[in-house]
Length: 125
Image 1 (cartoon, rainbow, N blue to C red):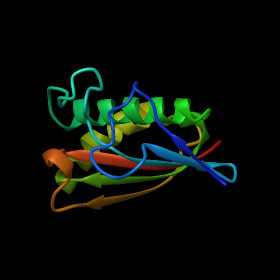
Image 2: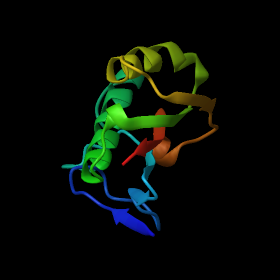
Image 3: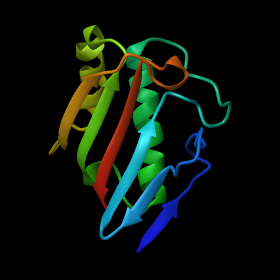
C-alpha cells in the first residue's frame, strides 16, 4: 500500500510526480531544489543558501509524512559542480549533525531550473 504525500509548505511538483510516497514503513521523498514555496522562486545566494533551502523543503515534506530529518536513513545529493561539495557539505552537516544518514553525492550535468543542488531522501515513517 502507498500513500501520496503533498504539502503546501514545500514547492509543488514541477511534473508528474509526488513530493513523497509513504509505503511499508518508509517515506521516499522526491528530490527538492531551492525553491521558496511561498514565491515559487529560487532563494537568493549561492550553494550554501541553496542547500539550506533544499533541506528546509525536504524537512517540510518529511514532516507532512509524519517523519523528519532525524529519521532519514539515506540521501542522494546532486550537485551541478562538485567543486561546491565542501560548501554544500558544511550546510548539510548542520542539518544532519547526529547520526547522519547514508549518502551518495554525484555531479549532474544539469539540474531542474538550473539549480546548484538537489537532494532526495529515504526516511523511516
